[in-house]
Image (cartoon, rainbow, N blue to C red):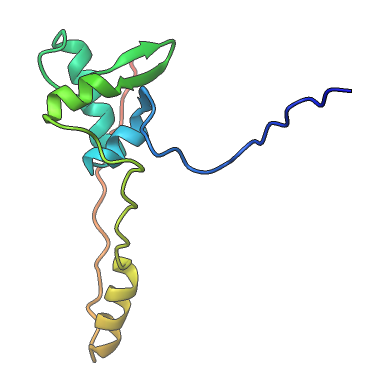
Length: 121
């Protein structure tokens, strides 16, 4: 009786980048923020492809063709994308600075302007 071949599924990270990247993946490759990536993708659409990140729209989603991004960059993309750099929270830094101060400055309330409308009949 012949035996059927067994197939093993692997969940390892792919070594080659996908043909179409999400905008978040492209932003990570370019090392820019998400807002910048969306702004540049919209600029690409508005300019007819002259500026910005090259994108194709599928419904409401953007996809970045890897080969177009590599053409724009002049070389292959690094995959997997680099991890974001951890930045020390600003709040923790401010709290240590304020605790060393002996006096605190009071903040006066701002005056608010009011508009009254007189309706005549």
